[in-house]
Every structure is written in C-alpha cells, then in structure tokens.
Amino acid sequence: MMYQRSSQLFAEAEKVIPGGVNSPVRAFKGVGGNPIFAKSAKGAYLYDEDNNRLIDYINSWGPMILGHAFQPVVDAIIEKAKMGTSFGMPTELETKIAEIAVSMVPNIDKIRFVNSGTEACMSAIRLARGYNNKDKIIKFAGCYHGHSDSFLIQAGSGASTFGTPNSPGVTQGTAKDTLLANYNDLESVKILFESNKNQIAAVIIEPVAGNMGCVPPKDGFLKSVRQLCDDNNALLIFDEVMTGFRLAKGGVQELYKVKADIVCFGKVIGGGLPVGAFAGKHEIMNYLSPVGPVYQAGTLSGNPLAMAAGLAMLTALNNDSDIFKRLEEKTAYLHDGIQKVLKDNKIEFTINRVGSMMSVHFDGNPVIDFQTAKNGDNETFKKFFHGLLNEGVYIAPSAYESWFITDALTYNDLDFTIKAVDKVAKSL
Image (cartoon, rainbow, N blue to C red; front, side):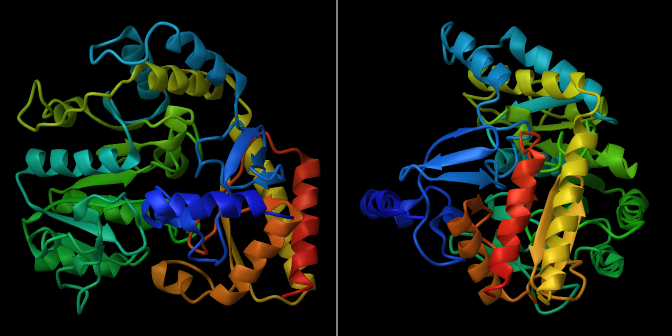
C-alpha cells in the first residue's frame, strides 16, 4: 500500500504540532515509519488519506465496540447539535445516561461525568484521598491511568521504596506518594501496605490490563487485593476506562465478581466522543463538591453532544442480550486462527485474551506483568505490524497495546486477517 499523502501530512503536522501528533503513540515511534492519517471510517474499516481501506483493530483505542459511525450514535449527535453544542448548565441527558450506567454496573449508586479517562482517574484518586484522609496510593507497573502527575511514576530501588518520576515536570513530592507494585504479584502489594501502615488511601489497578498488551489477572488476584484493601482501610479503584462496558455490561466487577469502591470509565461510555466518568457508592460519591469537601469541576463535563453519544451507545449495548457473547466468540475465533498460523510458521509467541480484548506477544513464555511483557521480541513485532499494515490490517503501533474487537467485524474480515497474519509470518 502507498502512504504518500499521509507522509506529506505528517511532515506538515510536525511543523506546528509537537512530534506531529496530539498523543505520542500515534507517531509510530515504537514501530518506525510515519503514521497513517485517517480520513473516514465506517463499521470495521478505516479509510486513510491515500484512500487505502484498513480493517481496524484499534477502534479509537476501544470505544467503537459496535463499529465506526454507528448510526444510532451518529443520529443522536446530529440531532443534539441542532439544539446547541454546550451550555455549562445541567441537562436532562446527564441524568438519563447516569441512570442507565448505574443500572448496568454493579456496586455503584452515583456517577460523575468528566471529559477523559485521565480526568476520571485523577479525580478518583483525589476523592479516595479526601474520603480516607490519607496521602499515598498504590499503582501497578505497566498499568496506565492517564498522564496525571500521580501516575507517571517508575520503580524505585526496591519493592518497598517510593517510586520516582518517569517524566520531567513530575515533582519528587508528587512521586513520593505513589507506591509501585507488580501486577499479578500479591506479595509486592502486601509489602507496600506493611511498609506504609495507615498511610495508603487507595489501590488503583487496571483489573484487566490493557497497556502492556492485554494481561488478565491471575485467579484470585483481584479478590486478594480487595481483601488487602479491606484489611488496611484503603479504597480499591478499578480503572475500567478500557474494560468498562466492553468485557461485560457491568465490566470487570461483573466478570470476576469482585467489588471495587470506585470505578473509572471512558472509551465506550462516550460512544467515541471525549467522555470519562467515575462512580461509587453514595457514601463515597457524596464526598464530592457541591455536597462534600472534595472539589472537582469541569466546564464541559456532561457536554450534551458527548452525553447523547454515550446514551445511544449504552442503550444499544443494554438492549442487546447477545452482544458480549458475539464479541467473545469473534475474538476467540481470531485468537484460534492466529495461534494456528503462528504455530505452523514456528514463531515464538503468546496470545492473551479476555472477552473482546487480546494481544500477540512475540515471546513463548507467559505474559503476566509488565516485566514479562517487555521480554517480547520488539523487532519481530515491528515487522509484524508493518507486514499487516501492508496487507490492509491495522493494529496498534506498539507492542504494549491491546487489540480491540468490534461487533462490526464479519467472519470474512477475521478470515482475511488470519490469512494476512499467515502471509506475514512466513516472512518473519
């Protein structure tokens, strides 16, 4: 495929946008080459500025669970836009989407809408600290919760040490309040609680990780973390920005039967528009201003276009009793097909899958955390990525990202993808 127009647009963008992109992973730094510029999308397909058609497995990093330009969402946005695009005042729509979200997700009574997953996680941490009157939080290496200062932390010198900033601009003072544990390693969490008694306000986790590839929790891991939080009077925050309304109607809480104290949402809940949210029980959520002391605000929070898109998406998911079964079946079919051709071509690999999220790691050993995810052969991944792109299949331009399957994919699309993987594998 030719990408002459995309390359030209990237060169123009670099002159006026840092790195030519407004979110770093789009720049293709992890795979080399120039990014593809999207022109339009419909269903399971992207169309770029060179008029190439690509089968899309990024789906705007998750929200296009029913396909691009899903008609009920498009119609809802258009009709709402005719009535005004922003008010900075309450609207009935906000209550309607709140009601359906609360009805779908277990263990939440109230929800507050914001504008992004980053904002949702940032606000959830502030709420947890205010509610518990403690400063420290535990996060897990490889779990991404947005670019708020509290989350841009790397490992210190040992399991019980404070983290250190991994981005200039994050202060040591901020970093000292973020403790880093290892995903799927309960002992690392225990050590942090023991070393910081009565100081930890919350544990925040991607209950199914999606930012080191798709990495599922080990059996019993989430329940054990829940128990540690209970034993130490800390809140458990599930970052379900990726998994919420994707892995089940009620997300990971429903799927794994583990209750969180606060749940963060994004992606699907906005139907493709910029929306985030965080939710919890009455007693926790009522700590938020204007009824409680924890301040959080946003002029565009509850924006009518975003609320219309999200309501249309959640309504469609809520009314389709088979949607999550279909998604899981399609993802399993793709998994099995890719697994077979990679085995036949004697490629070292591991595939992780939960529901409609999956990832291919070029390492034969199990991928259970960030360290094992980093063991993958990145040079092979780069060749794999560009090979699939040339065949008309678009996956994330990073070895540390999940594939997101959409219901708009047909089995012909899946077969095409499997054949493309076979062709690329023969050249690896």
